[in-house]
Length: 225
Image (cartoon, rainbow, N blue to C red; front, side):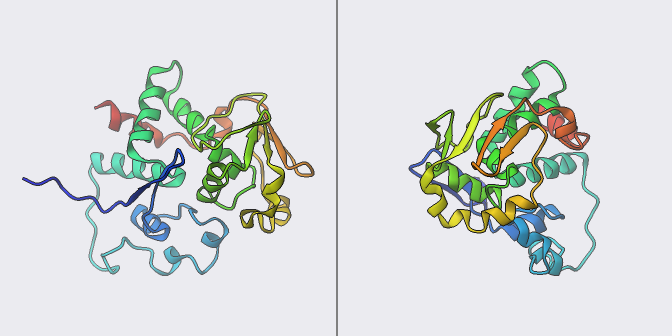
């Protein structure tokens, strides 16, 4: 029997980055909720999920059967992957590593993912979305402790100093940056200097920084089978 074909398109670049090319709005509709993959646009009436809040291909008709336990676990796993722009192998490695570490596996998992450099750039408000943050990093516009880092999955550590290269201000990726920073909340484990456009990692993300971890237990169960 031939292997089942997947609809997910993946692009591999010369840079150390791979990403999911499925349309962002379809990913939200498939998840059944807004994942805010397009930044501010998702909070407007232009958001496709507002106009078509049903899964692609269903045309909004018919009843959907209640998902099984496996289906709920799979849906939660896919949602987190889409939010952070992770591929299956990347995400599975994060989960397995978090299970092996001491402490709450759910907190370990989200702590690892939150410390990714592309996510940190997004959390600081230096990018409108995680995809844009990934471009900023892969284009070599970010320095950590005065060393250029172009790996989006690089995980920051306490006391790391994150800076933008001087030429970054010329990039269209930073259009209207001052306006964005004024209304963007920064997590408590990060400190941003808006004048110098640099940030310091104060500490590891704690439980209070990671939001509701309850549903992450289903992901741990999914990979523990």
